[in-house]
Amino acid sequence: MKNFALIGAAGFIAPRHLKAIKDTGNNLVAALDKFDSVGVIDSYFPDADFFTEFERFDRHIDKIKREGKKIDFVSICTPNYLHDSHIRFGLRHGADVICEKPLVLNPWNVDALLEIEKETGKNVYNIFQLRLHPSIIELKQRIANGPKDKIYEIDLTYITSRGNWYQTSWKGDVQKSGGIATNIGVHFYDMLGWVFGDLKENIVHLHNKTSAAGYLRFEKANVKWFLSIDYLTIPEKIRAEGKRTFRSLSMEGEEIEFSDGFTDLHTKSYQHILDGNGFRLIEAKKSIEIVHGIRHAEIMPLENNYHPFLTNRK
Image 1 (cartoon, rainbow, N blue to C red):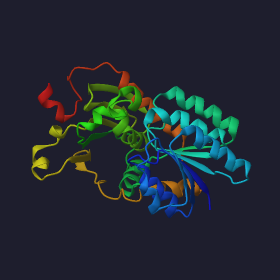
Image 2 (image 1 turned 30 degrees about the horizontal axis):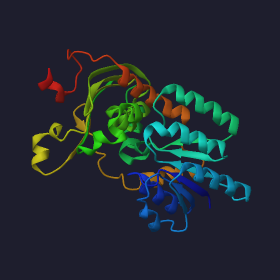
Image 3 (image 1 turned 180 degrees about the horizontal axis):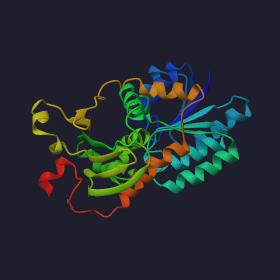
């Protein structure tokens, strides 16, 4: 049994991490969040110590170490801009780290963390659950076994509508979240690179507070992508059905179904790590380079290779 500490216990994604720690047969020793709405912990680890102040949490972790009780992993579910600092905290306390996506906001942050990994002898793992999704694994195998010179045409659309609260929260601050493409798109870009190879070209056609779109050229795919949190960008037919999300990945006009099967992917990710595998810093860097490029790209005119949802914007 491994001992875990968790930073960001009040966050939206934290219950998936709590469940993963529990379901893999491990123990949560301590948790931290400046917000105290964390009653969900009782469903998993009612005996875990909880702190709302980082300084007291830090002192407690140090005390545990001095008493001979090892913290094996620190799990991080905090706002994106805090990941880098919290990863460093975990490594310097002698723990391996499991961090939500995006791992960090800038490629050079990855380089610095690689140095701290070397100094501490500990590892950082990123949650990329799409790499463990059966449909995506099947797609990767299909591409690997397909014609070597084939370049696939891909359309990626992901709309997950959010209310007015989003822009008021840290997620609406590009300095803290990295912007819409970073916050909701990074795991898709990782998946595309994992399946279709290295990135060759990154063109952005739209990037504002609620939507982003562009064109990515990988070794084995040309990808037109569209991401949004704006409810009105959902196709009218889907809205008429009362749905507030729309997810589509099509290859050569064929829909790749991956809407289902997300329930236990965090648990699978944890087990993957505990089994001695897991996705390391260097693997996360490619997707961080992509989102950093999108964030700083010049917006290009809609001349060609643009997502069909942009037709009315031309």
